[in-house]
Image (cartoon, rainbow, N blue to C red):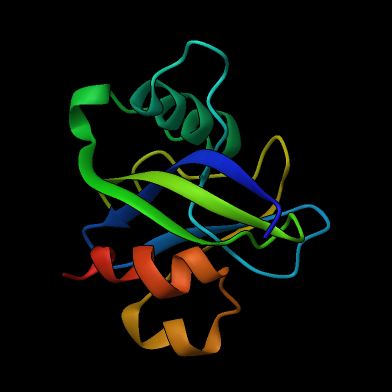
Length: 134
């Protein structure tokens, strides 16, 4: 691996037990919504901003529960690893319908039994998606 990509990621779960995953334009796999912090921006502020920009889901910073920092192969940047500060956000099912925006081509709400059949980025599959149900 030649470089690192630092991001903030949100494991968004609705009260129907579904997790939100997104696919960026040009990508073949889904991942948690989120992105790179702007210069001087905290990881929490970045996840709040990115979630709103990418999905239209607006939530107060206090609604996010920190999960920790996770590292895996970057899905969309060859020869890089992604270092993610991750958070869980619980939302009501159907509250403020999420829509794909900004660099997001598609979003899906998936149930736990759909994980194996959903093409997920390594960070999502190996680390983050499990927090939706545990």
